[in-house]
Length: 492
Image 1: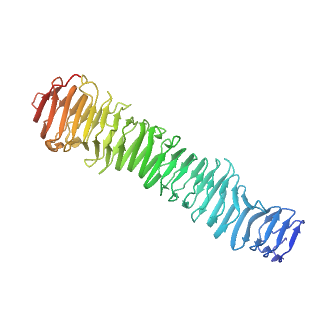
Image 2: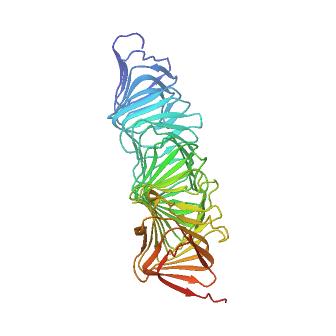
Image 3: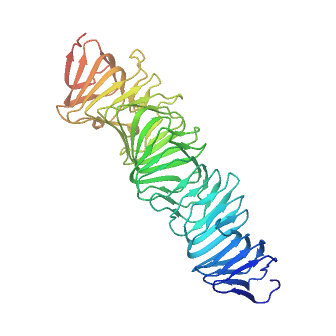
C-alpha cells in the first residue's frame, strides 16, 4: 500500500492467505489486521513498514520477514513500536540490525530480541519472554527498560548502555563477556544466590547492588570515578578466576559486604592512581593477599580476618577516615613494605581513626612505618616485628615529636604485646596518648628488640617486661615509668 491515504486489509477467520506480491506500508495510517484463527503467509518480504500490523491472539504470520520502519506491531494485547525486522513463523524473532529500536508499554514480548551492529535501542515497560541477545562484539544497545528483567542478557562481547536502572528477578543476570556503560544507573541483582561467569568491563558502574550471595567466577573491571558495589550485608565470593580490577586512574567503592576467598591480587588497581574505598567491609582471605598498586581508604570499618598475610605495598597514601577502623583479627599479619621513601602512607584522618590488632601481627620491613594522629590499639595477644634493632631510626614510629601528630597507643585489658624484633620508637608528646588499660595490659620487649623513647613512657597501671639482652634507648632522661619487669628468655 502506497501513499498517505488511510487503508487496511482484514484477513478473516480460519483463512490462510498467501501474499506473493510486494506489500508496502509507507504510511502510518496503513495497516493489516489478521483476526483470530486466520493466517498470513508471506512469500515476499514486506519492506519499509511504517504502518500497523495487527495479529490477534490465535492468528499466525509465517513465511518471509516484515521490516518495520518505526511501524507498529500489535500482537494480541501487546503493542510495539519497531524499527527493525520481525522474523515470522518458528523464528518468531525481532532483529535490531544497527540504528534500530524497539519500544513497548506495559507489554509481554513473546518474540526473542536479537541485537546486531551498533546504536540500537530498547525501551519501555516491557516483559521479555526470552533472553535479550547481543550477537557479537560489534553489537550495542541502549537499554531503557523500566521493569525488572525476567530473562538473561547475553552480551557475547557486545556493549550495553543503560538509560534506566537495570533490575533482575531471582536467578537472572548478564551472561557472557562484554562492556556495560552504566551512565550513573544501577544494576540490581535478585535475592537468590547465583554465580556470575562472564568478564565485564563497567564504565562508571554506579551502583551494582547485591541482594544475596554472588559467586564471581570471572573478572569485573571498573573505570571512572563513581563505580560502586553495594553488598547490603551479603557475601561476594571470589571463585578461583574471580577478580575485581580497578582501571587506571579509577575509583571503586566496595560497601557493606563480606568478600571471601581474597588472595594474591584478586582485588587490585592497575596503576598508582587507582583507589579502592572500603566502607563497612570484611575481607576473608584464603591465602596471602598483595596490595601493591594504588591506594585505599577506609570508611566505617575494614576487617581483615583469617590466618594469612596482607602485604601492604601502596604507591599512594591510604587513609583511615574519621570514626573509622582498620581491624586485624584471627591471626592476620599486616606486612608493611613501602616501596617509596615515605613511611607515612598509612594515614589517619584525625584522632577518631584507628588501626586495631586483635590476636594479630604487625610486620614492618626495613622501610619502617610512622603512625601519626590516630590510634593504634592492641587487643588479645599481638606481635610486632620491625627492622633490625641496629638501625634505631627505622622500625615502628609512634608520633613525630609534634603535638598535632600524637598517635594514641592503647593496650587494652588483658592484651599482651610482644615486640619480637626491631625497634619501637615512641615520639608522642601528650602523656595521655599512652594507655595501658589495667594491670593485665603488658608490653614485652624481647632479646632482638629495642624500645626507643624520646618522651616519657608511663606504663601504669600496666606492665612492661624487658628481656635481659634487649635495651631501652633514651635521650638522657629516665623516661621509662611504672611497673618494669626484667626476664631472661629461655634458649630451647
